[in-house]
Length: 209
Length: 282
Image (cartoon, rainbow over all chains, first blue to last red; front, side, top):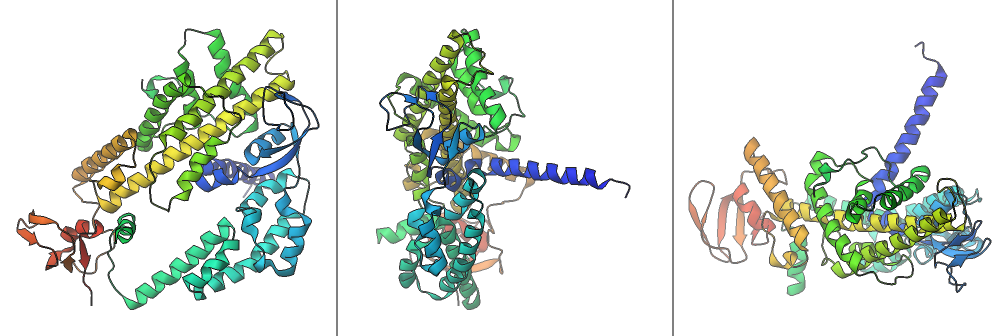
């Protein structure tokens, strides 16, 4: 083709970089993304900062170098990019969770640890120096995914409701998608009214009865 | 004031990227202290505009967001509360998320105002920190002292609050526009009550825009949302509709409750989605 392999590589890298930026753009209005970034992480300040009251341990509006503070992820991340703080591994990825996941991943209550376990993990992995988080997420997801899909297709709603209190937000989305797919399939097979009252209104009507 | 009159940088990145962030934070403040004649609102609006270049197709949505913000920013300026740090904004978003998908909860103007007031508070503290740096004779671009990081934190908090506010308004507007397709151009009272004034206006404008487009292309786009198998369907009336409804073939029909009819699909569709009729099958 007469094009050096390097130029195409560079193009590819550029594309990656651009797509990454667009990703960030894409999620600007995402409700779940915003809520997820509110998760707190503990950080250690590498630089002092004045005029902010985010350290509950100090009475003055001043943060000393080396003080340990709990910050929401969005703030911790931006400060970490500027080397103002170093981020500790959040407690939901600690040794205890790992052992439990290793023993029986499908039974672990991940929601109480972090409602956005996977997404949060993906965001936190590049900024803490723990290389194993990626593997942890992948193996946890793989083994739980199977369980979720089987249950979504077989369990009735009442029995299933106990099961889904331990799922993370991402898993619940999967679970609901699987269930609605099954419901639409059944509806299609049986037939029936294809055109119905708008869902916004039908809920109202039910509650009034 | 229309935003098109402002000379806005259209290619600015979203305020997440590391480099532009601090520059953005300093730029408006420097502009402010250098030119006190410039009204403060302009600067605030500039901050709002920076994240998104206006696209023509988003014009109505953008108008809505713009009106809301300019209204509330003026409010927020007067009533600065002594908020500690940055927790209200996410509450607003969580409230939206707690509602079911596609449903609206009432517009929480109280919380909205609090978040805006929080922004103003951060803005004031940010300004005082920047002023302090300037008084010490340091260069703002290069000085990386405690004041710099304090200002940075305040700046990030403003950016975050802004994102929460934008997301709240944007997602509500999206739900609202979807309602137009689902239940037609007239909103029922129970939904109307949940909207704020700007949202109602937005809905009206969107409906008008859709109508004028449909009359231009001469196609009614809001019918046949489910692909029809038959142009006629059997329906039963389940709610009071009223007499003398004129159908598309210029005949009038008397839709008494519990009566059954054989209608053109396109005529029946709006009544079904409003819950006044149901389709009879089998």
